[in-house]
Image 1 (cartoon, rainbow, N blue to C red):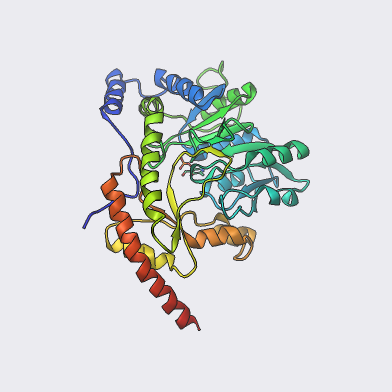
Image 2 (cartoon, helix red, strand yellow):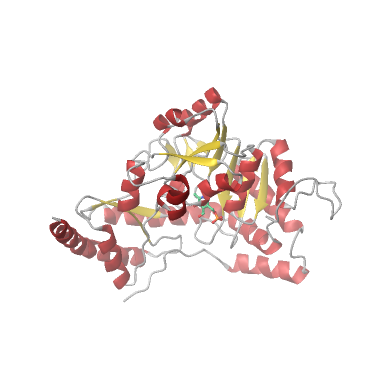
Length: 383
Ligand SMILES: Cc1ncc(COP(=O)(O)O)c(C=O)c1O
């Protein structure tokens, strides 16, 4: 039996040498690597400013501060996302207002946004889920009409393009994340990009304990945080962003192997790519179980054969503390919940081999037979 990892970073001797060089200098924080990484990243993201921080979550938090979110303000965002894209609103005592997704793209449905807007609405956070850009043009139009700030959560979408435009250049600011399962990694880490100079200076101050550029070390102009990225992470990020096209191309190849195999297997569907997605940036590979396939039984079957898989995403509005604190419940967001019940992320990374993809797909094919049988049995028991 093989043991397939859920994800795996692509680290070469170039990254290892770059980290060794930092350690040799003994300059481990607030050194030259952070600026080099930021400059390279801004260039790649087509942004005027890039500010490195210690996680994607920190970058979302800082974006909420810049957007002016405070007590009771509402921020519209999908529940079909990673928890941080809603928690960042809570950090500033605002309320995340969840809007359902388009069942095909699994991104926020722009047609449902306007009816969720109230006098308290301040911002929209579209999430480019799985590396596919949200349908940004109608979102930007609504934002203009109601004078709302748009913060793109591009944490899963480095390099993705929407109608030929880079994800991350479309809103007032955008956030990226570099956890080791991401397309590029810094270990832990994140980045905010923005063309707004005032915001860029604010982000630099907020990540560094509220110091302004000219503040002495123990002067703090505003309430800030320690959200700094260290030099080892920045050195790793610099190499990875220099290799990003290669990293994305490797993921394209693995996704293509999966697509080809999954087209031949009944009971599941491959990921849907919208026409507006002129470039997909493959973060995860998520299949959809069709009616009659018991997703959880399929997961168990795969696990028994050394293949991990994840229900991705588990909707945010159904997380226990969101239900308790805000009263969200099953039935509130039908498309989100359907996706939450039927989507399944398979092992995926740019270093996966064709043999590994074949191994996963062979077991998927066999597992679906078992999962279909178990779905019939479950519904018989339910009757
Ligand atoms: C959509 C989305 N937003 C935010 C984050 C948060 O990033 P981090 O884990 O670096 O804090 C992630 C990371 O998984 C993500 O997928």
